[in-house]
Image (cartoon, rainbow, N blue to C red; front, side, top):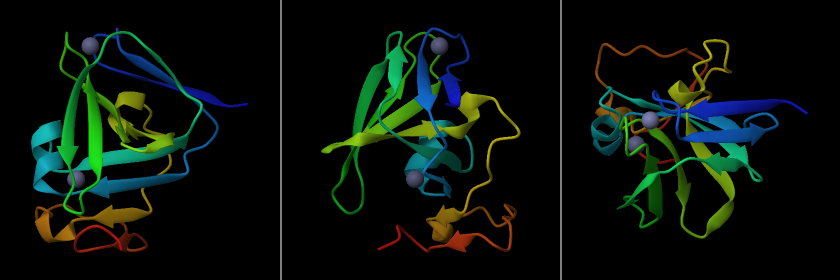
Length: 134
Ligand SMILES: [Zn+2]
Ligand SMILES: [Zn+2]
């Protein structure tokens, strides 16, 4: 079976993933802009099981619809590597950049398009939502 490893930039925090992503998306919300330091976040959802090694700092943020997202950062280099949603232990969201793989599948979904920087252009085939999809 295929495995992939997401890693922070210093390499001490890693997540090993099995199988193909269940979904890939980008998020333009302002919280993701601040979290990543970039103008949008790219995220891929993988089904459990997955294996985390190294130390992580946690930060919990409530989404607009009340879901609690627990973000994990490397305490050494500060890279945002992954997050989970409280009550949903069967999946993990990986920061696509932490995979360092330009051949990784493209996003199918774009959320919080209302916050998108106007110069950011996405494929015509992407499913775009003003906020979170219902
Ligand atoms: Zn690190
Ligand atoms: Zn977001």
